Length: 142
Image (cartoon, rainbow, N blue to C red; front, side, top):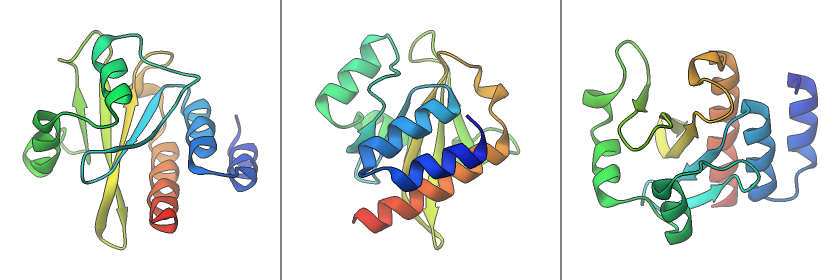
């Protein structure tokens, strides 16, 4: 999906769940949007991670306190010279967490799981665009 087509699709979306599906398609991997309170705001339903931890979290509607505690230690756990955390210990599917920041305030996290495309293949500009959009839309929905 090209950037122009992506933006047109997002502008036509009627709710956050549709936007999440569009973003998941754009990134070509499953995603979960997490609030600072650890609740799962939305997740891709067409693209999923076929493992127990993912299925359990989206079914519960929140991530574990253990994982939430890890996210609160962002600066000490983020990847070297990057502003994201890559986790490869949950299952065979790596996950990458990005902070969703709106006006210097963390409004949530974007979790992208490596299933259909390597996380390293996703261009930084694509992630920046998605994170900026999601941070803005989360603030708008709140």
